[in-house]
Length: 297
Image (cartoon, helix red, strand yellow):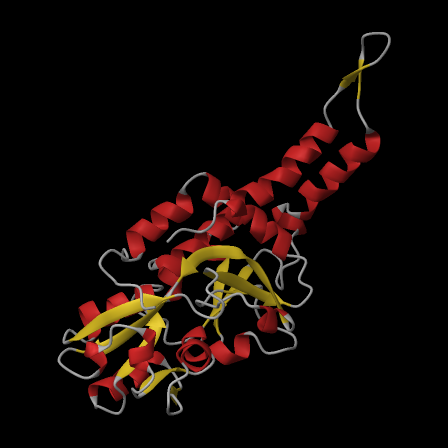
């Protein structure tokens, strides 16, 4: 799974067009001339994303939100500020592109459901495996995607949940997921089980329910599922993965207060990180590969 290359192309194209608009032309005397309006427009764009001009909440500081606990492999040791784990590393890479040093990044706790609720935010952006979707985008803004995800189903080995080989097989099972997540939406809209899914405040509670035989299987994004099955619940297994909702590729995006002028600058930063291979390198470093996980149809 990789962030779509269109990301970088879409971000670079306007810059290329701006550069073309500013290219010198030969006049009748053989001298060069530039379009003042085009030059002014390019200058304004550059100035808007200059570090000192960024529309951040606190001058000289980038305030980033995420939930607590902050789960691996997205964060490490429940400490977003250590730069370890995929999303922590991505946040610091974006901060660097924007001109902020690591000690200029301030983390704040934001419960998952509260992050995409309407209203003012106490962060510049939130990064917390938040799927980009139209309903959430009515109340908040999103960056371009920085990771493409699929949903995974986790069950204890030797149980009824572990025997499922298709989405149809999951319909008769007791399923659970964290509240407010795409995992929960996928259970309700894609699997459509015979009984209502169990809804948990966070992934820790969902994992405990699985171990206590309160549910037959739980759902999470694939990298989280890898960590759960390999480290946290060794007697569990990932029985399969699937794309939620319409079957289109799900993407995680950074979340902003509605109307934030910071979004274009973060998109430029993400495009640069995609272009130079940083996002791919961080994904390889922190997230597990998908090889061997069957697709549930």
